[in-house]
Image (tube, rainbow, N blue to C red; front, side, top):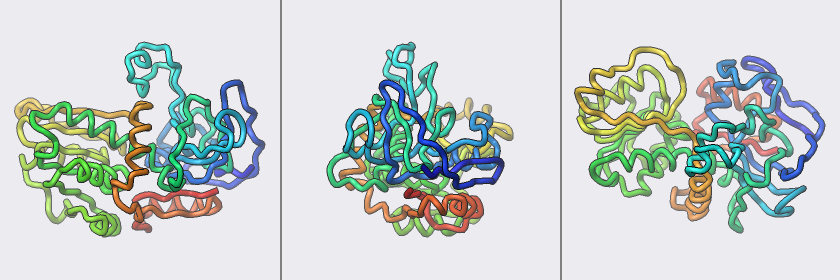
Length: 328
């Protein structure tokens, strides 16, 4: 089969490689669509010691089962491979499984013609659901998990809140679309890349360039930081009203100070959200299949053979697409 290998910092190479063998309880899935995640870009820069080259990245995917359970069925997949018996798994917080592994991190990923997936990670797709749309399940489930966590912490319903989303990449844009679907009316997205601002505006979202129009201090009840950089953390703390909540979703860096004095004096709730549970994934498939998030025409598709160029274009900001999905 062909696979796109991460071979070193800012190096991707399309190679022929052997089909990995199936173990008991595993299926082989022919990949029909697979998205490039921000964590893949983090690895591409050589900033993720968990992803050791040479390896096949990728974990956002949909395809057709060709061997194993559900043969002939179209599926997406949970890329987190969990143990099912640790405290977190028994509590229903499988995303925090003490023994988890992950496709595209310590197992071969989805930037390939096919991928081996444990049967319990397979999620059957509704009839007629596009594999490109289904490949958005993983990032959209991350957003759903984060929104649900933050909503439980607010004093009033989320739909009544003023909300700021920082970043209009795939996670930020999906956050904006999902918040709008939840009934949030006073919603603003902040993004410095003009191409991404145009994409989000075409999707009907209200945009600002925070360099030209910084969010006002103490102006919103909830902030979703979908970048996760020192400057966006500072922006989030400043913009959140006393008693409000800040959801930290992005993982761009871990640099700079964090104003815990302001967090304390404003009595802010600061939350993190890591991936999703199986329930989040199933709910997200239903949400995407329903069309509730709009046309999703901001997704760009390219062939797997153009994967190296796609990574370079995303890093350089040369594309207006919030998400590039590769099609083997």
